[in-house]
Length: 115
Length: 114
Image (cartoon, rainbow over all chains, first blue to last red; front, side):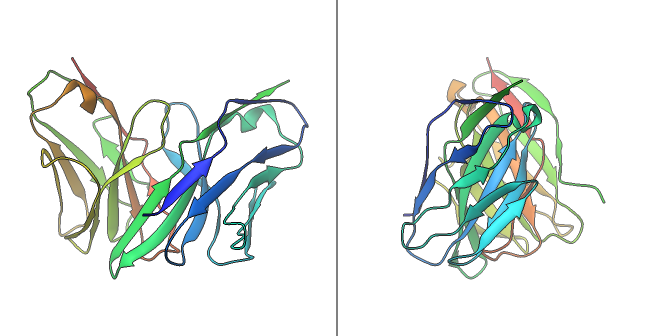
């Protein structure tokens, strides 16, 4: 079956540092890939997405490129802020059969940004 | 526009009891999925409903059931509650059931089993 592997956290960075959170996946079909962010006490919010190989998703300074050759979708940001502190989830979405969309999540990476 | 709404926000039950969790999707969204999120883990897929039919089921026991109503809202039912059912239950909706559709999440129902 499909699976998503994320780097373990927590990741602690100083403000304005460069961020990379690694994500690799295994899939049998042609999935779409997503990054979600979860703040304490809240549900998940979509951060960015890419639906086919070599697509780059971007939002709020975050970027990730769908690399089929390395089965990866690493999240990057050039300069993090304290407000970026949250848990980040990599996710894979696949259409199992018509009408059945299954989303598989990684275990999450907690990011803490220190002023 | 209203996002995905879930009720109740918090719930405390004892072992053996039954619980019903409710979800209203974003207007126009036909697909609803349910997830269980244990502290420190990613969401685990329980069910997906699309156009009022169950389309997929994760690796959960038969104590878990769900349904989707004509207005696309949904309920998740859990019978014979166990301590291990304590978790955040998340509902997510999407406009259609396609792999490229992002899911929009509610804030969840925090279920505690005593």
